[in-house]
Image (cartoon, rainbow, N blue to C red; front, side, top):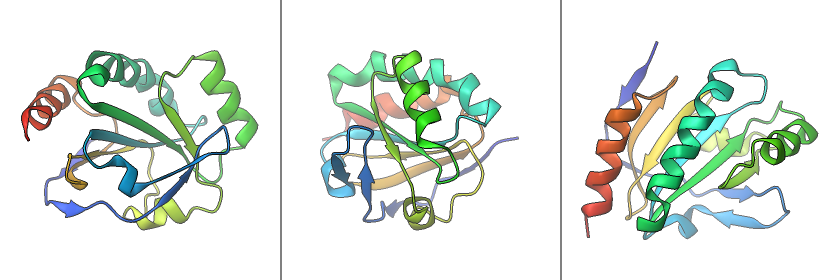
Length: 147
């Protein structure tokens, strides 16, 4: 089952702690189109859609598209690291240890929840459940074409 919302709102100010210990903030996303994916290694849909998220990242990355996968607070960090390494995830992975990022982004509880953020740092779409990737690709193309 998939729900989408299309009201445009500014992406919340968050600090993402990446697997390598470095930090990235919402402000760092500006100027690029970004897919922010809340997921967990224990979520079958998340694991099933990951190859499509990788393919989407590979297809558009050179054109100014980024992907940020945010692991839920209940996901053991060792599982997340292992998943990222074994699947060779080509994008940045953050661990939301305290759950503050999920809370800031609309109290995310269901995984996967995916947000598309435009170059201005606005959330243009939210998907709960696996997105329709053909439609997602059309949206990304549209957003990349915007100044």
